[in-house]
Image (cartoon, rainbow, N blue to C red):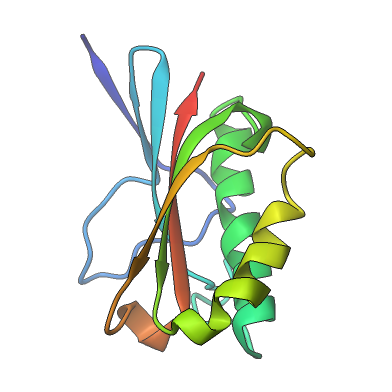
Length: 129
């Protein structure tokens, strides 16, 4: 199986210390790198708390998916990395708003002690092309 390594214009660029592709296409699947709540224009975290950060985390992979010819409707699995589980309900409310009712991907939510740039949340995706 051939692998296609994708860098998508309009998606937040990787920082110089973190070499990665925005996504890798492997057969019928697209593996989207974990997205931080960084503004694509500045590379900096968006202002605000978990609600604002989760919205940005969900907008960033949409740019990657669009560049790869796909959408959130094709997400099969998500991994959510959350710094503070007190933010779980607020993150869930925002996350759920990006999917059609009854069409939620499989998911794991992992508690972590810290994320790059001081982010509160990070999400990576597996998508069926």
